Image 1 (cartoon, rainbow, N blue to C red):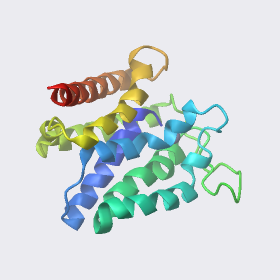
Image 2: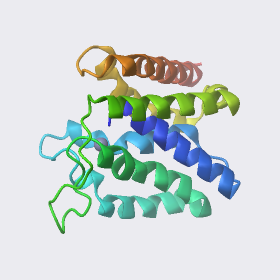
Image 3: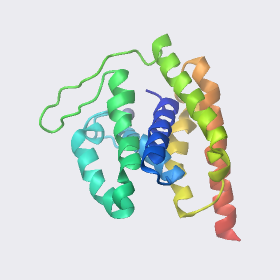
Image 4: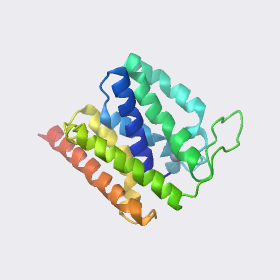
Length: 196
Ligand SMILES: [Zn+2]
């Protein structure tokens, strides 16, 4: 799945749990966790969708997340887990879920450029966008705080699409541009507040 799908589904999952658990989620942290597994693309020695997309990483990540968030850990943990077990399980070559016990990749094999994936990512983005408007999260995002800086990670994943380094289906271009503008705007405000 491309960045837009991961970010949209991560947000939707976290918002659902926020409502169920009657807690308040940290939006930049949710966005960062939704996409952080793809950091393996930047490490030459790491196989994409291997170690970082495995159950063991989710288990290990739960330790610092528990210390940070306590009982409110679940929106964050599921924002992280959905990347591997919804988005990347659905598309491409699947994920090495049980690394290091097994190097086998599990997934449904939906092609990244297929209409099925465009529909899955496009509809997830529309649902997330609508919820961001209705919940006013789109405004809340601009309240600069320490964790706003975490948006560097999701910004880094939509950037290659915006500059034409990564090809995505045409229908997913606008959502990628939108998120690029949103994350850049929030980060610019964060920098302005840090400097002043
Ligand atoms: Zn991934």
